[in-house]
Image (tube, rainbow, N blue to C red; front, side, top):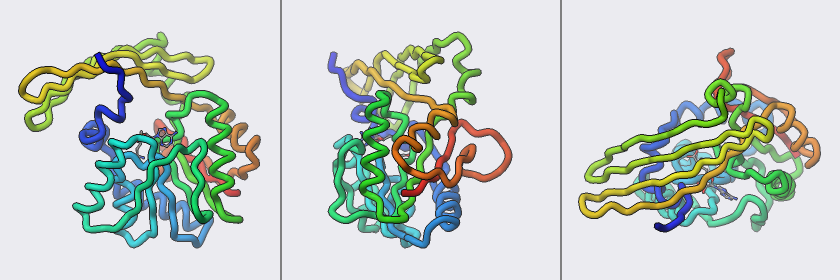
Length: 250
Ligand SMILES: C[S@@+](CC[C@H](N)C(=O)[O-])C[C@H]1O[C@@H](n2cnc3c(N)ncnc32)[C@H](O)[C@@H]1O
């Protein structure tokens, strides 16, 4: 059985497997950014299938996408083509990418949580800072540990689901262990892909980091990035959301 990353296996189904309110989130991000910058050029860091990159481009924002997973980038390029927008998607690692020209805004939607080693988080924040222009703004979200503590009451959860899309049947069989002390969830299991013939099985190990407000504040301060806002979710109402949305500047 092959071991592949979760994103490599699910790339062309990712948008259906993980639906998000793309329009709503893009509108909120535009409103948040308007409070801190006049810049209209964004790097979508960890852009995945480019769904947010393409939505922003459709609004007339100058945007480029970067991701480490080739399969996600391939889907992103197709999405842009099908939507009739021109967006540059580049392969890069957020821990060490170097833009040809510094940029005014970096948005990391859902991608910072994939960095589990503290050293990688620090490297990434330092690197983001050095790719931002003088007053550049960094906006990102992470999973809020306090929100998820309920879900992981005993530290373990099983995820078994079958997902049907067209002719394909995808089976997920995961068990996830959450370490309350470190905030790291480690998922181990199998994804099966049946395309109407034989079943392909892939072994998957995926880890995510969940943050407290204090931790994320500490990481940013260590990097020298100044915090402008920390909100619960992208929509600015009073309900508690699963993510913390952080806005910082160089
Ligand atoms: C949860 S997905 C979010 C994708 C997209 N931003 C969205 O919201 O639909 C996280 C993405 O981050 C990418 N990623 C993970 N580690 C990365 C790294 N070190 N450098 C660049 N991209 C990374 C993954 O390949 C994946 O596409």
